[in-house]
Length: 337
Ligand code: NAP
Image (tube, rainbow, N blue to C red; front, side, top):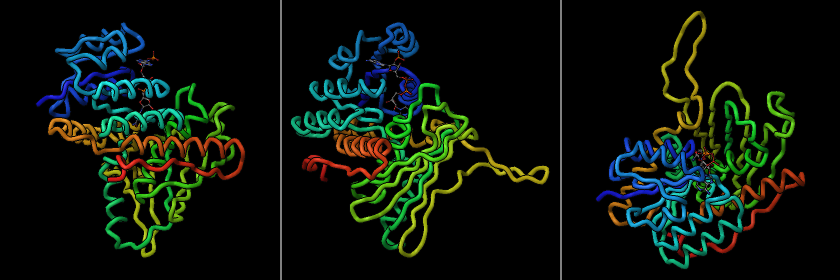
């Protein structure tokens, strides 16, 4: 069986996922695209055999030749499209964030809970990265004993001029907010966010870098350094300190060059390069579930809601200068297994 997919939002990651769905993974066909810019949608559709442009995302969702929906538009538009896909009873993969506020995420959770089975998967692709998976297996197999601390760094080479302090939290660090919950299989209950000395490379209004400190339900402390304009490449770090030892993400397996008294190795330029394989695995697993008639089992609407709630608390902490509690509603049974 081939899953016929409609893609809403054909910007940077939308086009990358279209390439992935048409050239890398098996079992998928892109049959429809929509974008707020109709000329862009028509241009992208014309390059894909058997694909045509829809006038809008909502029109695309109800088309007969669309079995499942991929939402890769701008974050504030996600809620409308995810809720419409649920109303149409179609599986929907939504790039992170699920939605930009806790209230919007809650409306999605309520719609999916009323539908009665899982339709939504959120694009937290780090869960599909082989190194993060190995790190998590090392913790969950118990040999290191109780996890106590986690140190993370999210260093970006350079950001667009419109990148804001809020995006440091809800666009960049939201990945760590999800993976810390996933790593320790528990919720984050408190966040403190502080800004360091201002990075002179960044515009005045951008509070760069930030340090976020999370406390989980069992008391694990996890810190994340978020650096927007690091200037040297894309550098992702993760190290767990546990009762009997320490486990960390490795340096990537790149060729090391020894030359002129120096040892050097390439650094990924951006997230596309660092997580290339993770996105491929993420989409192949999603497609495999759909072609075998099973609901998605990747990051859920609940995970999207939890991460956005943590992001809201981090933004609050940054504004007030105090720790902020993370307040989640009761978890519906749909998301407990
Ligand atoms: P982008 O390049 O700006 O692309 C978004 C596209 O959606 C643009 O073509 C935009 O048009 C279009 N769009 C906006 N509103 C729309 C609407 N109402 N209907 C249809 N199309 C609409 O952004 P991006 O970098 O691809 O990011 C898209 C999403 O993916 C964001 O939520 C982002 O956080 C997420 N993302 C995730 C990862 C990851 O690591 N998982 C990485 C990158 C991005 P205009 O340009 O005309 O506004």
